[in-house]
Image (tube, rainbow, N blue to C red):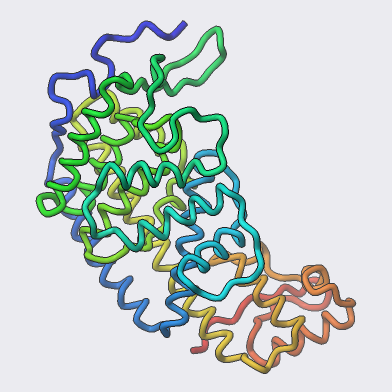
Length: 372
């Protein structure tokens, strides 16, 4: 059994915990790009009307709620999340009913957005924990730190041959560790650059692993809070989107960082991840700007079937339908006849809403987003 590990295996067991060491020179270029892209992000947002900004905000936050949950193996409904988030912002919503888990993670995203500037408190963390485990009946400690006597371990492999990837501090020391963490988090707000502080906060929180469950989602929320505080505004970046696409590198980087308090490699990885998230979010905002302009341009010019199909195409996101929209796709989406689909699609091409590639049964259609 792979359980006989050194007494000083983990970062929190070592004499220099939590005095992390890192090379600032490695991080300086990443910090500069982060600040520059943040300005570009604000500029892109300024091109949207107030109503469109609200819609974009709801879409970006619902995506983050969906994916931060998916990283932990929890599959939620995007439409329900977006409906919940819009409702929490006081926006018009449909009758979509959200599950307890969807309501909880939506509340976390909105609370994080609204309260990012405030200092972190233990009450905040306990409240967030109640949100991320909403609806769970299998947990003993909800809205408080873990209290079990057995070791908190991240383990894979079989029961007879487990592999311990990480073991957190015992429950009895968690309150003290978290008091020190919260004090550091608030004190460091003006002392450290944004990427560096967010990376340290995420690693330190995950190393303490203070809750019975939900630590990953809360750790990413803390990173978002730190990044937002560095900019003085909510970041609205797709951090969980990038992490979800590269879960193995994420867990590998965390695993390596959990064994030493020399964390340059971790902070470089985390900084690059945030920059990738910024780039993705900027592309997403640009796409949503195109969406808003598209429907402004074609308001009153599309029939109900065409509008339904266009909304469905935009739901596919930046990458769109793989291989383009086909006539059979259109029939399936709109429940129309093949003849009606052909007429509708030809009309959309004539109006400039779609671009066509190929002919007849081989024709594929793509959104035309070049016009403004």
